[in-house]
Length: 84
Image (cartoon, rainbow, N blue to C red; front, top):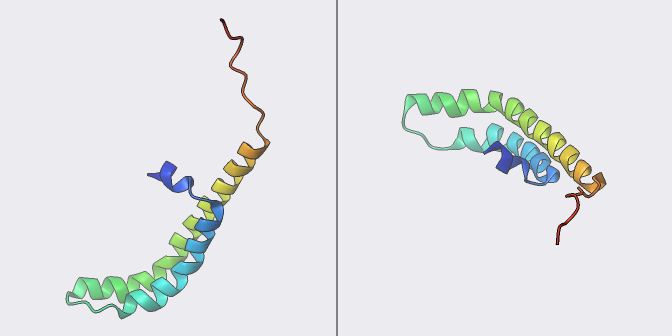
């Protein structure tokens, strides 16, 4: 799964990191819930957990940008001599 996520463009990871703040601090705590554990999760843990997830997205963006830069500057790989 992580390889699939790292194939996304680096700018998409940064966009996800930016969008986590309003999602976790405003939208999730306002969801209607019926269980006490859901209430605790959405109103207490979600607003505090977004910086960790956002930092993970920024880290994935850095890794993705580095991989993209490596692919751009890479020389073609020689497969050796062809036999015909």
